Image (tube, rainbow, N blue to C red; front, side):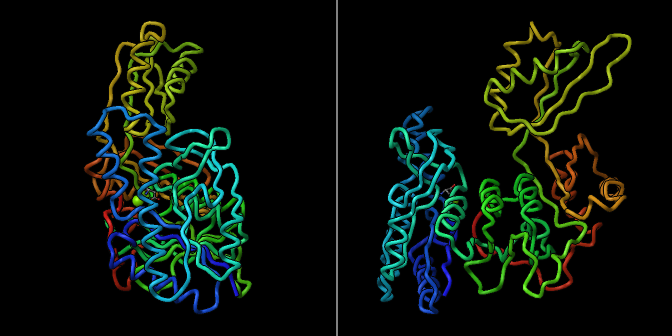
Length: 424
Ligand code: ASP
Ligand code: MG
């Protein structure tokens, strides 16, 4: 008998019929003899709709109230799911994040889990019930206020609960069959990855792959929770995220390239004619950091000898663009640059694979594939197991397909299935 934590995303519980379908699946796992704890997201696009609604009431909703509003979405789905399971003759109880013992810091809108004390969940499981937990929410230690964990946060709830309960596996049910070598919405010939290491999955998530939230993977790696990403619409085995070699004792397969991720959510700021003297870069990035903005790639050009000035470009989430631009403009006189260019029509492609550490020629092949497809590279950054490039946004899909093919990642079998959802 195993203890399984199952997480169902919004597209898996989008309406009453979907909830009944998921309920049936949960009762099957329970009747097969396993203990089951379920974490659920808000139905369909409920969270987006609640955000829209708040925006209609006020342009700047207080964050504390925003969090209370948004947690309502998960409370709707958790109670409906518990009812549907009960209706199938299996006892089920739903719990809010607070009831489940999810304690967070007090950063509204993107709180971090500090501790999970799931005594009520454990008691429900011990009594033979299925426990349903509202994802994406917790309560602060200091003030007892309700918090949310940031968009997509239910994955993190699931992994945190799995770690706290000592679960055997955390199953993340979504609308695709697992983690693919590229987003199957863009590359229909993408292949499902059977096993992937935490490090590779971290890079994929950080580079825009939306199938798992970055913080959930960080959490899973820290506590060694095996995560099985699979579809709630099929019974196929999905992708296992783990560093443990498979049962046969065979070393974990390490292909050179795990996959190609893409990200359309970033923007690029270029600061033109920065005096090329010590301290200017430090000043610029102090100003940016001071506005609470987290940046990604940074490029400084060679300075022009005759002027002693240089350009510095960096990428950041487009949602932070206004804040960063305002802060830099305010400090233009003391930094001493001539102008600032803002460009949100960029896309980022990332090639990820642990094997590239020990294989030469990966970047050469990547750049050749892009050039053959007529795609211009605007910025490049690398880590040990990732190469990222910035392109024009409207060329990103073509770039992903070209690189996917160049690295022989296309599947010869049937096409990847996207069962539902909008992919956002
Ligand atoms: N409902 C929240 C969101 O849409 C949390 C989640 O889906 O994981 O972001
Ligand atoms: Mg959602």
